[in-house]
Image 1 (cartoon, rainbow, N blue to C red):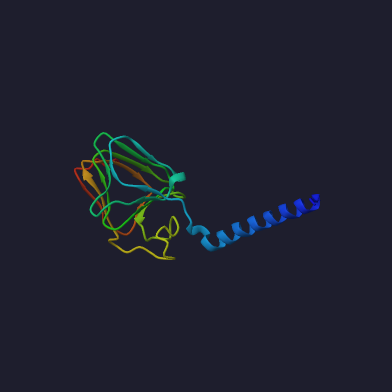
Image 2 (image 1 turned 30 degrees about the vertical axis):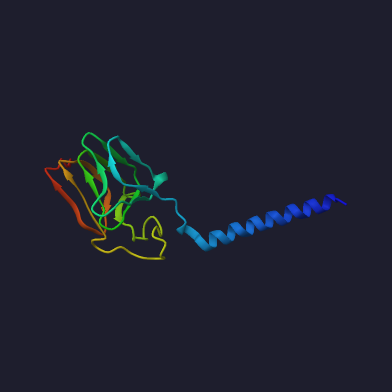
Length: 166
């Protein structure tokens, strides 16, 4: 025999179970369960990296990374974090516009740097080391950087014939 009260009790039990699982998941995974955007390869069209997609993880084979071809612009919004896996780089033959602010700088850092963008490597609290990733480089790139931090790179900025506006 079906009772109306029985249905109400079942709904309450399901709500409780759902809330319990949600809270358990949050406490178990906490802020480490971040949505990250994987990037890499050669870009022949303009790109726009937004705060909503941050952190961006440069994740490609050794010696490669993100390549911005000549005539292409990469625009990076304030507050965006870009994390580089070992031996990767940002190669710019086009333009990178990265204008952070005092309160929301743009950060280029190691994949292992958990102080910004959370625990993207999933190993618990870690910091980066100098040389974790390679560099920002290119042939005659146009860079517009303002309030940009470069952390744990091997070479940092390594440019030839760069157009760097003051």
